[in-house]
Length: 276
Length: 303
Image (cartoon, rainbow over all chains, first blue to last red; front, side, top):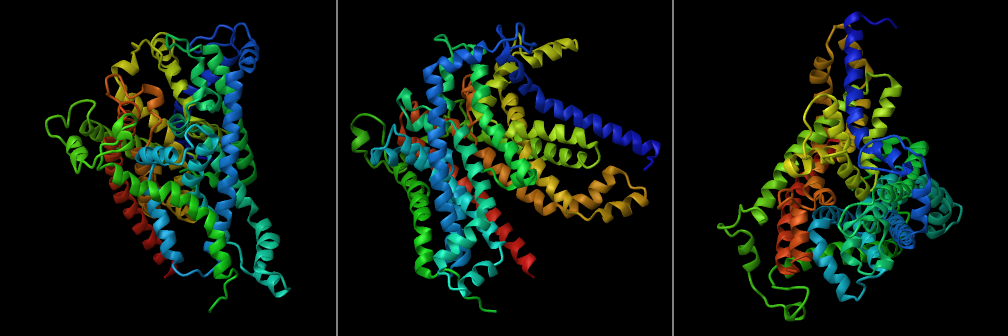
């Protein structure tokens, strides 16, 4: 297709503008691609000179930092398992049963989940966790995240299940399956892509979070990476840039990998609906 | 047509139980508990930690005390700061930039489009502490990338975090959250039949005319949804704490950060809970608007 000169220049202008905006978004992150590999990293942007992997070696030898990644993993996996199971079961019930008051329950849930935000609820959540004696445990972080992420996870999955034809389970039941069998053997495999999206979304949310573990945990051995990263500050409060950058890169890798996985599998439009 | 339900009421109730328990304990009980605590003088330590007194509206009166309301580090200052933060970083920053990106990406080369989208989405998905540190390095006075570029262009650099802390967190939050608006508007624009634009092309319409007269009226519903959602999220966001700690001297202390300081640094749970209640009331107003719009949309679609 041939473009008229004015359309050509319009397109050129658009491209330049898009490139400029793209640069604005990329610039604060480019530093992270170089600094972890730089033996003499500063806060400034510089090509690694000399190039080294020693920063990573040093971070990996740091027991506290590695422990932090493990703790993040424990908390994220624990939260994800709870959210995944509870949300799937609840979403299926909301979609396929005819429980009285289903609509009202959904409405109230939606309302509460948007009103009770982390910043509003940090005091009562701390008090509840204290009251049941779970302060300073992995379980506290896992449960709080499970409760907080569940409503959104349930709505994503309910919409997903609503879009699946009921005839799948109906024909299984005509063939003699019980409703529970129809759920596990017929519906569950079909819902699986939806569960994958919810699980990835929940994982990224727990993995990246700072405030909840920061409030609920006290001992160093339990801190997730988001809090443990502050061990790479000297006593004077200045960051040890080389190690911090290397650790931040390691800590970010799972999130990037999961993002690539989801966008490869489902395309990026799926992300539109899934951040709380 | 009457459909038989695939799940009996008993099985349905059983399926709902784990979720209901978790949401009940960690979402619904906190809602009522925070209201209750806000009428007490509960603290973390000391006698009032175990046996808090009922103090009536004292916490609320302290928050809305007219003599100190607007003073930096007080509730009113944080509230107004947060409103400004929402207007500039969410409504103007994220929404406009997201809309611009979605519109531009329709007519730029695919390689540039995916590179730009990747950068925007990376800013959104990376863990918040990593982002906080990236910006700390980016804004460093002596070596930071931003000042390096400015000096390279012959412009003076600045100690951004000290001199313009509010504008730093505004730009920071715009940067952090624009991806959501971009994705929402991209899929909204993709749902417009291409023939509409082709007809406008034949008539020789400019890009701006096509945007104003065709696209914008058609995606108006999405724009409203986007504005409400990003307003609610931005209103409750805590991430700027990781960049500025609320400082210097309370100049970036958003409501969420103020709550955190009152409750977990000064250990005044009662007063912190009162702030939480005010935040919930504001959230409630937005949520009701949002739910009402959702209902209208559903009814419209069903008709």
